[in-house]
Length: 118
Image (cartoon, rainbow, N blue to C red; front, side):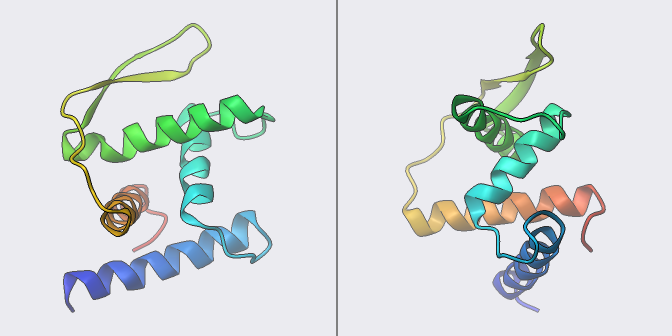
């Protein structure tokens, strides 16, 4: 199976599984899944977050997702247990479609590593 086909298949499986678990089957989009990863990485799944914290959670997720690609590196946890990352390499300027593919690839890899999908 071609790499793109495999990614598309895994993304569809993951998106459906997460949607059933967290959105009563309503299909979660890329941003919603990134947010869920941020909550997972913070380790406070039952806490309610304000809008500005939601953006921070998405930032945590993006840093964590792109860490294996060499763009970020975990730095420390602050006094409220929020993880902080430092930039190792600036992201290349990507077209919207290329950004989406990179993030989907990173998300699929994240959930493969966690054993959530196969």
